[in-house]
Length: 495
Image (cartoon, rainbow, N blue to C red):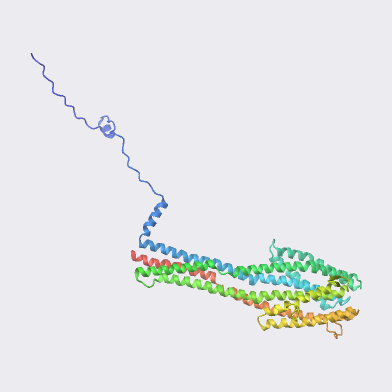
């Protein structure tokens, strides 16, 4: 039996790996299936620019060059900040000192002049009325000069007062009342020339307008301008503590940087850092010295000038009011009275006594001194004391002559009282008017002296800060540049 031959075992043909798509396209062989999903490389996470900058700074801070750069930037920033703050604070204080000298004090002085001119005009009007139908030309000229001066000073005050300030309201009220007052005075004069009693009524009405409306408005203006002056002093005198603090901090940082440099290099001096320290020290000493001298001058101008001026202005105003009331005592001839305790007294004589007590006080010391005693205490030299003492002596004389005039009037001797108040044509009778003129002239001399004292001291205070704002800025720039150059010198050793 025969068997068919056995077939050889089947050996599978080796298979070729599938060709890539591009190779298959070239050979015409179909591309095989992909072996598996493609493996993508992981994308590194990108950091922000800020994070990269922080990383670089952190890395740089671990090296000595990086530390030196940071120290140089800090030193330059501190010195520049010190210069900027010093310039800002000294500029504001210098401006305030300039306002004290050239704006607020002159305006305060003008406000006092308005008050004095109005009060003096009222006094001159009553004096002219007492002289009879044809008032003396000298008295009329004084009245006209006072009204002109008040109008001129009101125009100046109106130009410098803010539109919403109390000063503007006072100036507006005075500008409205002044024409009304002068019209009343002219009516009083016209009736007095004709010998009509109505003239006295018009004069009392004009005086009432002055005393109850115009002088209070002028006093309000004076107080407002004094407040502005005090505000300017408050802005000019405080120490610039913020600038001083930055100056001390800058010097401390520069000292620390030089000590660090010495410990690391054993070099005693770094020229740039030493120059920066010198510039900062000069600026700080200039700031302290300049402001101390400025503050001293401003304090002196206030203590020896403004205070004395305020007291002397009050004293002069009191003397003017007293003189006006003394005249009106004779004009009214008892037409207006007030109750004083259980007695009835002439209204204007009571007002006269009140103003004289305020002016001179009790010269025996029972009730303390008046304005003249205070002015004498504030006077800091003989030139200031002498006119005040002269005024005080004439006030005593004035009071004695007034007693004599009142005794004549009470005895029914009106003509004798009139001569004792305004002076007789013969000049034989020593009048209260002559005493008042002497008091007013002495106070005018004292005021002129104290005004010069104020201006001298205030000018010294203002001059002490001259150049400081600009000088501090220049020194700060030079100091910052020197600090950077000093640090740059150390950095060059690492290149």
